Structures are given as structure tokens and as C-alpha cells.
Amino acid sequence: MSDFGAEFVSALAGAIVGGCIAGFFSILATKQMLQAEREKDSEEEERTEFGLLQALHDELDVVYERYKADMAPRIDTLMDGQPLLIYFPIHQDYFPIYRGNTSIIGRIKNNDLRRSIVEVYTKAAGMVDTFKMNNELIQKYENYSSLCESTKQPAHQGMCQAQYKVMADYAKGLKAAHSDLKADIQNLLWELNKRGVITEIDHSAEYEKHLYFTFHIAVFPLWLHGS
Image (cartoon, rainbow, N blue to C red; front, top):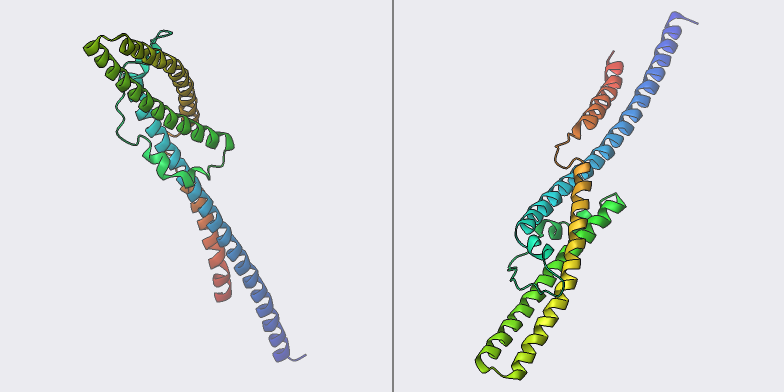
């Protein structure tokens, strides 16, 4: 074989081998980039979930601290047969973060945690309705008491006494719901704290490593071809 033929074959073989290597690394780089993108999406989902858990923790903690400082002691000290004769003014939605992020809450991966969050907020909303109902019972009792004082009629006195008993019976269920909700809130706050919602976590390190690796794999075949 002539020198020209040998050089041609050698050049052709080199081009084929170089092309195969470049093609291999190009495919590998594409796979790595797709994998990095998938992991980036997964990490973004984790960051979104973690941020929501932080917000839910703060929302519950703030509302619960206010509740403990105001209404909770009054309910805890209620005696059997005693009604809750205290208005609890409710004029707002106390859970805007929860109500505004139900779609994200539905994507929380941990089944037990997701269920606990939904259960606590459902019970809290029910407790709000319970206080609203108790406020109405108080209003009715005060109306009966005023009527009884003004008329001194036995019938009106009987209505007042009957309403007092209704309120006392209602207070028994209210106190039970209050105790149940307190325990559930404390357990959920503890669970969220255990997951580190008070501490900021940097989720970007792993993605940066993948990006670095992907970049070098993508550049290597270009360098090889140029050499």
C-alpha cells in the first residue's frame, strides 16, 4: 500500500474513532443535562414544599400563641356544668396560607404529614365555627336574661334557665374539641420542627455539581474534535 493510501486509511480511521468518541460524549452529555434538569425540577419542588411547611408552621404558631394567651386558659378552667359566657370575636380568616396553597399541600410527599396538616386545619376551622355558635348562644341567653329581668315572668325565667343549660351542655363539647385540637397542633408543630423548618437549607449544591459535570462532558468532545 502506498504512503498516500496508508495515510488516508489512518486519517479515516482516526476520524471514525474521533467521531465515535465525540458522538458518545455528546449522547452522554445530553443524558447528563436531562438528568440535571430532572433533578433541578425535583429540587425546586422540594424547595417549594419546604417553604410552604415553614409558612404553615409560622401561621399555626402565631395563631396558637394568641389563642393560648387569650381564650385557651378560660376554657381549660371551665368547670363541669358551667357555660362559656365569653364572646370570642371572630372577624377574619385566620388561615390564609393554608387556604391559598391547598394544591401544593396535596403534593406533600409524606402521607402522614399531609394528613396531619389537613386534619389540624380542618379541626381548627371547626373550632372557629364552634366559637361562632357559642357567641350566638350567648347573645340568645343575654336576650332571655334581659327579658326575664324586665318582666319577672316565670315563663321567661324558665326560658333563661333552659338556655343556660343548653350553653352548659355545649361548653362540654367545646372543651373536649379544644383539648383535642391543642394536642393535634402541638404534635404537628413538633413534627414540623423536627423536619427543620426553622433552619434554612441550601438545596442548590447538588445541582451545581451536576451542572459542573455536565458542562465538562459537553465541552470535552468539542476539545477532542478540535485537537
